[in-house]
Length: 336
Image 1 (tube, rainbow, N blue to C red):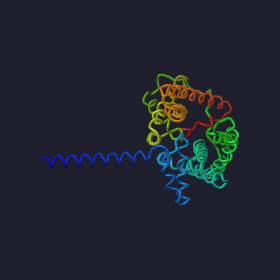
Image 2 (image 1 turned 135 degrees about the vertical axis):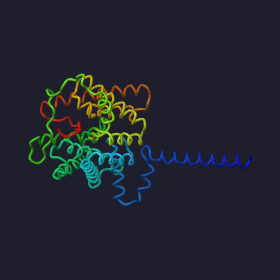
Image 3 (image 1 turned 90 degrees about the vertical axis):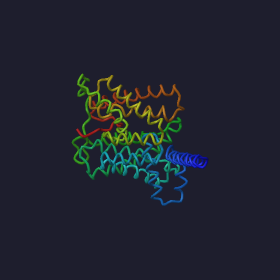
């Protein structure tokens, strides 16, 4: 009997030890994964570039985790191989441009010169009406992604005097200039026309509740111009790998943005596709899970930021629609 009890205790200790090791390995994959940088110091440049690029991918969602970046790229290729290719090209071109032009190595390694290029390339693909695998689109993707590096550097110097980050201003400037230089009837780079305010239809009792609820996780995917449910859930999981708190705020912010869209009677398609929620998700993540120490006050502030982000997005979309232009931060769920 004593021998059996001792064997059971040893087996229990082994199981507990295995669980602790498994938990420790899982924790190594969360957060910034700073230990990976030390491992990559003596590796080939190509491998280093891949890690820098993956960090750049996650900078779009305010994260900094190469594993999350890999999951997001898988989600993009799952949703649309063409969009996945454009995103990959964008982040690599902007990162390489930063390396070639001698920008700060620490910024490059942390992906700070990759995410604007990725956003530009994804939005060019999402707005384009030429269809998938239109190879000429790679030309503005290359130029736009590289331009973001110079804009980021200049704006960082300018805004740094006021203790403000350049953030996504390079992306906004580049994509707006691209849309202004092209048109829906452009012979080489046509894009979808913007929906004017007069085309907005009031909400009716025909709204499908399940579709509206489905639009909440889609709001997280729309940050990467992804309008498919499965890939959007994978993107949400990627946020959770970096920070479960940010993932919770992403869903909460998207729900708040959807509620804001309902309150202003936006088109049902905007609710169903997640377009009403993605700005709210970003605003809620930034305040509730990243820039401020979490507390009930910052939690309420995050919810308020989600409402404000969603309302401003709707207002800008209506305003720019009067001149047939898209709001720069608004991707499309599908071609119209």
